Amino acid sequence: ESCKVDPHKGDTCIMASYTDERNMGGLAWQAPPDNWGDVPGGYDLTGVKRLTFWAKKDEQVSEAYVTFKVGLESKAKYADTASVSTEKLRLTSKWKKYTIPLEDQDLSRIITAFAWTVETQDVPVVFYLDDIQYE
Image (spheres, rainbow, N blue to C red):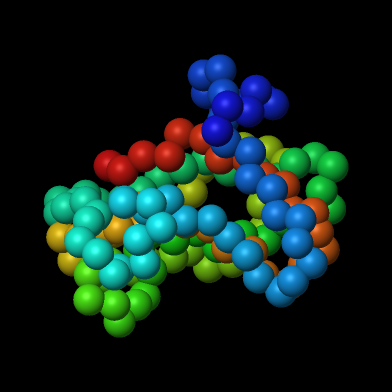
């Protein structure tokens, strides 16, 4: 979270790295941490229209395909009330702004505020995130 490699804005950005050779991996920011819908939690984001963020791949990485998400699909008792994701994005080595539209979603309980996944590609996958915000 304190990466100083060419942040989009400010002094730092987030560096994400996936080096496992299995088919899929990722990271989820949850409230409370490690809550997969089994306990109450999350945020009421009613009225939020979108999540925006900036992303780019590391220049040393040949390819970086990443899917970004708000909320996860689950049948757990306290699951996210919405699950919205981007398509699989091919990141470039230049900063680019991305948007996940959230209008017309039930955002009354969002446990997984932001997540990313990578699937079946050469490793390592290294990319950077910055300026993640709900609007």
